[in-house]
Image (tube, rainbow, N blue to C red):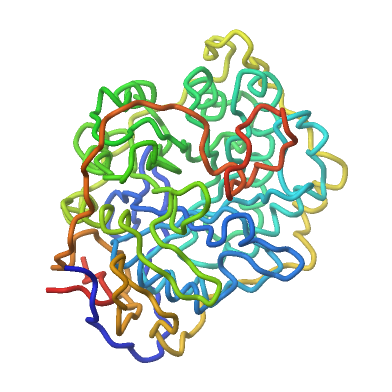
Length: 486
C-alpha cells in the first residue's frame, strides 16, 4: 500500500515547534528537557548545483511552495533535520525557515558555496582566505542566526580530502572556524555551534578530527576549536554489518569524543536498490554512545542517482522507491526511547594540541594559525553591512500546492504540513502508516570509504580539475502529514 490522503490544511499560524538546542560535551541537548538529541536528517539541495543561482536569488530555501511540499514529505519520513549546502545570505528565507520550524525540523547550514570567492579552496588555501570571503560567511550567520531551528553551521565541507590537502589546509580551516565562532560570540544571542564536515578518507580522517577538536594553548575560550565534527561516509553498502562496513573502526576512532559526532552524509548507492540497513545500527546501542545520528544523502534525484524524490521543473514531484525503503527502516526505530535519553554529564575532555596527535607523515603538525586578513577584524567588530535579518513569520496555509505522486504513479491527495506543538520534533514511526517495502533483491554487502559523491553540491567543491577531489557528479507528536494508508 502506498501513500494516500490523510490530513487537510490547518489554519494560518505562527508556530514555534522547536527548542533551540545546545552542545553539552559530546551531546546535542534540549536545554528544557535535558534530553539528548539524535539527528534524523536528509541532505537538502533541490536542483543540485543548479538549485543555487546568485544572480536570480534562487537557493534551496527561497521558494516557500517548494519548501512546503518538501517539509510535508519529510514529515512522512520522520525527519527532524535538514542539511542545506548552498544558501544566499541576501535572499529572504523567512517563510521556508518558518515552514521547516513548524514541521519540527532543524537546519544545519553550510556557510560556503561552490562559487569562486565563496569558499576556502583545497589548493593554496592562503589565496582564498581574505576579508571578502569571511564577510560572506558572516553574512550567512546573520541571515540564519534568529531562526530557532538553526542547529549548526559548517565552516567547511571536505576541504581536506587527501594527504596533500592535509599538509596545507588544516591551519586555514581551523582559522575560518575561529573567525566564525568569534563572529557568533559577538553578534548572536545564543551559542550556535560551528564545525566541520569531513570526507571519510581513513588515511587522514582521525588526524583531521584531532587537529580540529584539540585544545589550543593560548586560544581564549577555544574559539578555533570545532564545536562539532561530522563525516560524509559511504562505507555501508547494501547488506552489511557493524564490522564489515568498518563502522566499528569509526566508533573506536572517535571514542572519548568531547564534541558531538554525526554522519553529515550517508547512504551508499553502489548496491541498488538501497535498503538503508545501516539505519538500525546508527541509532542502535553500538553507535549512539559516540554518534548523534546522521544525514541521508540526498533528498532530490540528481544524475548521481541518490535521490529520495524526483523533482520536476513545474514543482511536481515523484516519490522514488528509496523513499519508501528509508521510511520502512525509520519506522522500525523507537525514537521515543532514543530521543528521550537524558544526557549524561560529559566527562570527556579534548586533548591539548600537539604534533603527537597526528599520525600521518604528511599531515600538518603545526598549530600556529594564520592571523586575520586585513579588514576582517573590522567586520567582526562592526558586523556585516548590509546586515541580513531573518525571523519566524506567519504561514497562511499548510496545504501543498504541487502535485506529488507515489512510485506507482498514483497521486497523493490532501498533502499538507502538520505544524507541531512547541518543543515537539518528528519521530520516525510515530505514525501508523503501512507502506509497501522497497524490493531488496540482488543486494550484497561491500565497504567503500571514498570521498563524498556530493562534490558539486558541497560548499567547498569549487576546485579545478586535478586538485585532488573527485570530479563533480551532480550536483512525540504525530509527525505524518499526508496520506498514509492505515
